[in-house]
Amino acid sequence: QVPLVESGGGLVQAGGSLKLSCAASGRSFSSYSMGWFRQAPGKERDFVATIRWSTGGTYYADSVKGRFTISRGNAKNTVYLQMNSLKREDTAVYYCAARVRPFAGWATTRGQYDYWGQGTQVTVSS
Image (cartoon, rainbow, N blue to C red):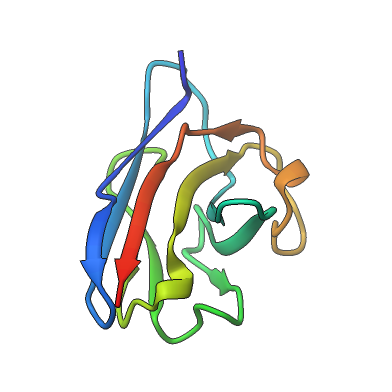
């Protein structure tokens, strides 16, 4: 069973908005931090944003800073990604991830996360 499930992806015109959601499914764990990554066709899976569960502190990739907002839900292991002013280059499969171990810095690489979702497609048209 996939630990995390993403939803909210779809097709949107450039300049539009989408809100992605991610929730834990089945497995019980407590996240220290959660994050979003994205992978465009033929490219590596890149960091987008992360949030520390206890403090709500956030950190973003430069490419999305000022346009995307990560937030946590009231339910444990629930996180959102509000995406505004979308560009064609934001087109990708977006993945949610969770890290359970404490980490002093910001977790921005794939190997720093313990659980992943299967991804949701976001397509931005011109």
